[in-house]
Image (cartoon, rainbow over all chains, first blue to last red; front, side):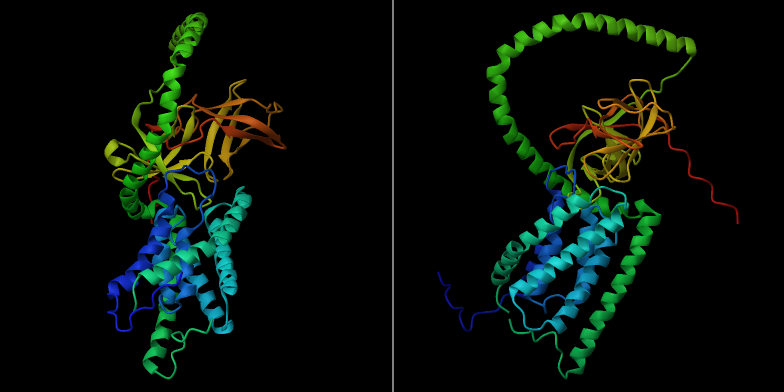
Length: 170
Length: 290
């Protein structure tokens, strides 16, 4: 099924909607921790980070590098990690993606997926090192969590792409 | 995919400066994050107000979803109960008769115990219940094991109070907001509970590992090794947890202790009870004179 071509001279969507939809989707992703489950391990993927990466890789011009910091701050407020952990790790991951943008110029979703996988693994492992003592027995669950997050990323990317169509034209 | 154009500012000075400025701001954010991390390491309750502010907003959502899940989950239960009630009745009558004798003996023991304690002039501190509420959500994306309790300062919950469930200790309150409190579960990698074996009262420390088990280490090096199936109760040492609340059962032996499975598997379906700290926390040490 093909979509009808957009009207040439259609009115552009309001600015608050163009920028509000991405921001709200990232914050909602961070709020995945409010599901009423008492987990005995890190079982949920870091959805806030995944949505943010989805937007960053789909629309590089949407968020500046520093946007990762306030999103990370909100994630720290709801995730139970020590304050500042996601602020630090997400911003560093954004810097790394910026670097990839200048080196890996022509790329496909496969490369984007790899970059997102690297970013998620970096943030989750870094978060574990910051939050839990080295002796803690959380590494197996952490690996599972990273794997699940990597496998889920294409789905998140599809949802982000759908939101990108729905937020209206520029 | 073609390279995005907007990241390359071209010859526009304004765009170049703008991009550079965004990098500067991001670098400052990284520095601020490191400061935040250091602060939260030095003074963990520093951001209580912020965190509990957000928790106040998310708690009703979690509570609502949990209530809906409870309602749905109770339907098959209700039907089962309706049909099972007759059989249950007969079984309970038999059990009652069987337990009567046990009860009589326990009553006598309790009376004896009371009398002997009175002789020794031991005084048991009463442990009042502060609040009963449900755990509504948890830090399921993190390697730490925190849960959010649906009661806070207004219900009398304060930081440091022990939380237990119908089967045993759940954890303790870390920080309390107006209507919510953050609870550190037993299995959190930084949690530790002083326990003793029911068999012979040997004291030990049960600390969380981050997975579902607790690591139990005897306090003193006695050669009375643990056995699988040993039951551990809280000992009341340290004054936080009241004594004699079930904590865990030993499931595996290790070189210098044992691994134990907590009795209480916290669940959003059950109530958790917050009790007053067994002893009041000692006052903070006076700042050293300059």
